[in-house]
Length: 74
Image (cartoon, rainbow, N blue to C red; front, side, top):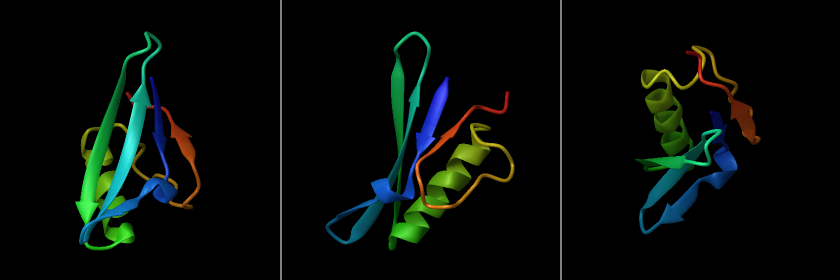
């Protein structure tokens, strides 16, 4: 499985910002996870926290704002 997150994918919808992560499996399946915040930074932070709770990110993910490809920790 490959996981892609990018703070540049954060978009504004009405009065909220939405951040997303996309996961692809080797079998061609995919899933998208969204989070919402009052700012783009808050939406991204909530997304990273949620992915950490799901154990889809290492404990100290990189937060450089560029596209990153992470492998699940398990």
